[in-house]
Amino acid sequence: MIETMYRYLARPSFTADVVKKIVQKGQLGSYLSRVRLHAIERPAYAHCVYQAALLARKLGLSEISVIEFGVAGGAGLLALERHAEKIGAALELKIYVYGFDTGSGLPAPVDYRDIPYHWQQGFYSMDEERLQSKLQHAELILGNVAETVEDFCAREKVAPVGAIMFDLDFYSSTVDAFKVFNLEDENILPRVHCYFDDIIGDEQELYCQFTGERLAIAEFNRQNTKSKIAEVHYLRARRVQEYWYDAIRVVHNFSHNRYSQFVGNENQQLSIEHR
Image (cartoon, helix red, strand yellow):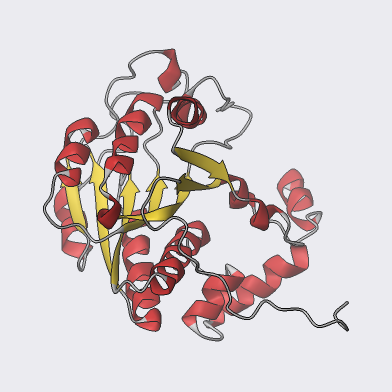
């Protein structure tokens, strides 16, 4: 108890944390302002959806898709659904939500890369009937992710995917989920904000670049020349740091037919008096 209190009170962002809790609990300001302040439930999810929606608007799109890989009990998918509805309404954008899961919990680990010292078969099973009764519009896609992602990519109509939450735990399942980046250009944004739930961890999980999600990311970057999963430096430059900042990545598809389309501010001239 004392150690927990010390770690919390000693944080440089203690004051910011208190302010955020007040803003979140009192629902102060607009929904988008709370998203930007990270004074919101599952702020990493909200951040990725918001950034995807902003890019879509700049590209002149009217709809996008967001995905959660690894639904488990469903709390994350429900939060993603709420964020999509409110952010979409605020930015006048239709946001479709998809959740991928086996429905029966984790499969058996394939080998050491799936971190079997921490994950075991059957963890995080789902009460499908209960979750379906709570979902408003999100589509739950159940089955082996290697197969369900291929089926998803083969769909005739998919609104451009702009944000993805990866929470599959395993290296092998994450590699299978990366097949989503094979979508045609019209079905995915040129830059996709992603949250990886299992790349930080603690002294028991000991995530590293040789196993799990970190290995899947490293291999993806080695194997692909025209797409890269990159770190985001703008978050690390912020004065107040959040734990989840290190779990955010952006997939850059350099060969996307809209990757180089200008989306910056039009007025970027500086006067001679500028300092």
